[in-house]
Amino acid sequence: MAAIVTISVAGRYLFSLPIPGDYDLVGILCGCAIFAFLPYCQLNRGNVLADFFTQRAPERVKAGLDAFGNVLFLAAVILFTWRLYFGMLEMKASSEQIAAFAFYRWWTIPFDLFCMVVMVLAVLQTLLEDLAGAKAGHAADHKPAKAE
Image 1: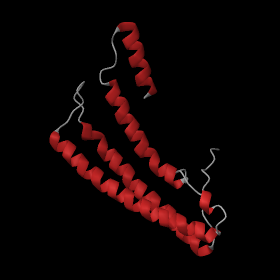
Image 2: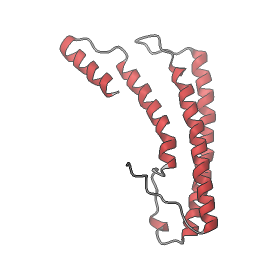
Image 3: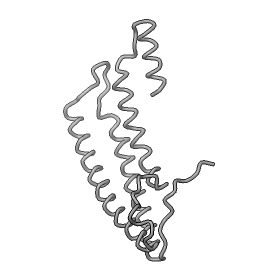
Image 4: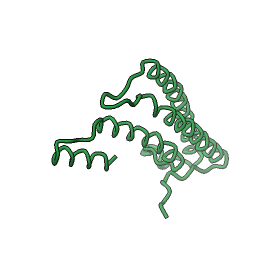
């Protein structure tokens, strides 16, 4: 994405020749990148966590609240995946293309759907971890994994 923007801006400034559809390409790639990293973020528990009121709660309570939050998140992720599928079907039926070149907008949605299915599995994994933690009396580690 950075290369597309850099080349397009330089081409526009130096030669009055930007990359056609650069804005659309960067938007599509950005969306794909977001979908790709959602499961990773979930598995590393990198989502925003508001624990101000539960800092002093027992570990079992924290794990139970985390499990409840994951149940709600799982419902939302399943709903988003379901609606993304039907949105893809509508985009395919309308044959919407990027104006600068023949690229159908729905072509990237199967990748996004795959990422959302992986996200459902990631939320299920963290839910099972939190349920096990609630049963055992300890909350899951909410610190993101360190890069080695």
